[in-house]
Length: 99
Image (cartoon, rainbow, N blue to C red):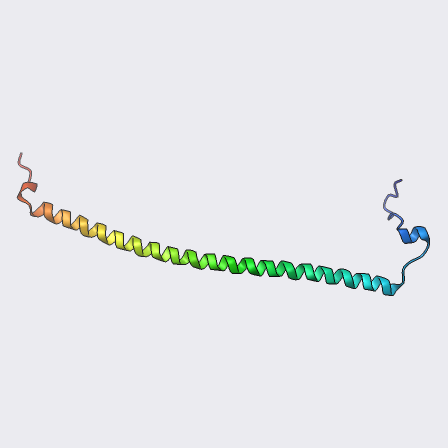
C-alpha cells in the first residue's frame, strides 16, 4: 500500500495505545547516551591519530634537517674539490695548450 506523504502507521497506532511519556523519555535519554559514547570513542580515536601524525611530522622534520646538513656538507665538499682541480690545472705548465 502507498500512503503518499502520510507516515506509515506504527505498531502503537495499530494496537491503539501509546507508551507512557516516561518510557519515551527513557528511550531518548538512552539514545543520547549511546550517541555520546560513540562520539567520545570517535574523539578518542581522532586524538590518537593526531598524536601519531604529530610524532610522524616531528620525525620527518628531523629527517629534513639531517638532509639539509648533508646537502650543505656535500656542496662544500664539491666546491672544495672543484677549486682544488681548478687550482691544480691552472698552476700546471701542461695546462697551457700550444697550437
